[in-house]
Picture 1 (spheres, one colour):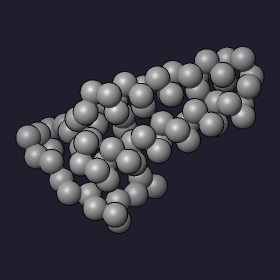
Picture 2: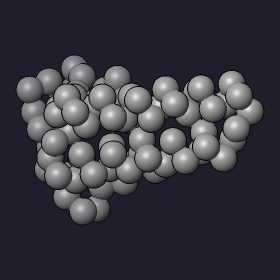
Picture 3: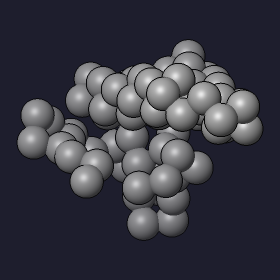
Picture 4: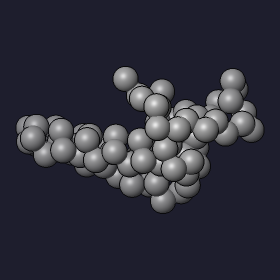
Length: 76
């Protein structure tokens, strides 16, 4: 799943995108530890949003449908 395939709560999406952007910034500065931390935070916000039903997969195959991903949902 890609971030552009996720819709839902605006605040969750803003936080995820901010952490992803921060990660890119730290990569450009060769600060790989902080870049990795930002990726982990972005992933955490995504997982939490999906689990709580605040976020859902979007796109042609999922248009208008919100799946209950439950506790067994994994991105990997």
